[in-house]
Image 1 (spheres, rainbow, N blue to C red):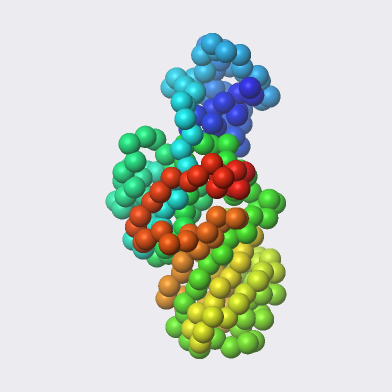
Image 2: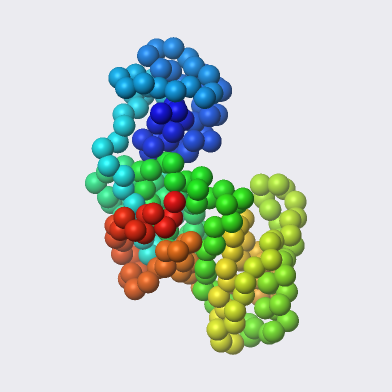
Length: 231
């Protein structure tokens, strides 16, 4: 098994982050620093910053209907973090983010290998959101949202045009939007371009996995079939 896959599958971090740690000389195998692409053998001792990495015994995949007020971070110093909220007995971490004011479907796992599959923009994974706003929705608004909106991207420190997407009006103040990218506070920023504010934002689907009837604040294990649909 490749070293980055082994460390990622332990739940420590993503494979991309592992590669960075290897380049920084923070990863050793049997006490020796190694290079990218290294393949480990059974019995090898793998350490990251002196921390022994062990192969996990089983993969954990949870779905949570996140309520507002919960922060999607593993940092225990952050009050209201998602790990304390779920209070699962084994180490897990959230896959991606929903901002503190948003609710709905989010995944938690100990399988770092699934992170890139779900989060890389080039994989074009669809996510559905139900959005309620503070003004009456017009056909022109729906059309402009679907074509793409120029919004500020804090990572690039400049404006970007969002990808074309599917937008369906539900009623005077609610619409459903399907995104294949996940820019910071994307839907809120898109709406603000039209002087419209989001009053409720709920994610209801990731790829083939719907939120379904899971109650707000509740979580459950994914089935094998659901996990296969995410990979």
